[in-house]
Image 1 (tube, one colour):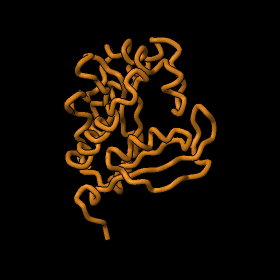
Image 2: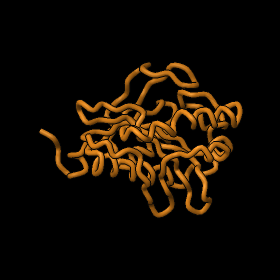
Image 3: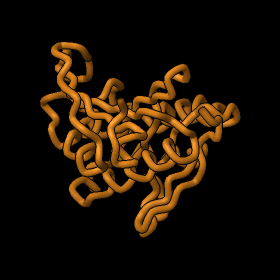
Length: 188
């Protein structure tokens, strides 16, 4: 695994970049305080912009290590962050990562998250050198699974009653992509 860290990635509509402390107000306003956004996530809505500032104060110093992958999703036309995408778990021994993402409700249904996820998958395989990238969603949130499918991830299966989020214990539906999937061949 190459410890390239969170580098700026550009897509036609998005700029994926490291968070900065100045993102606190946009993050709080655009998604972190919205119960609809956090409904299927593992963290509660932020109660104040100060909670968001404290979180960013924890995240931002981690970028220096090269093994922290946490992007702000900035909409070019708006010029501010509207969501996030991150490697929430890394397993360096097998070259694997698990991803998590969220997007402000005002931008749902516009194809922005598959665009961001596809760009991050490319980066993690091509620059970081990972062999596997996976993500899961609550079975009651099939739209998140559709994002994964649009980005080219394959359905692997359901882990019954394996997770907990803001709705309680849930079935986790797992999708993944292997380096070999991108190259059009199966691993033996």
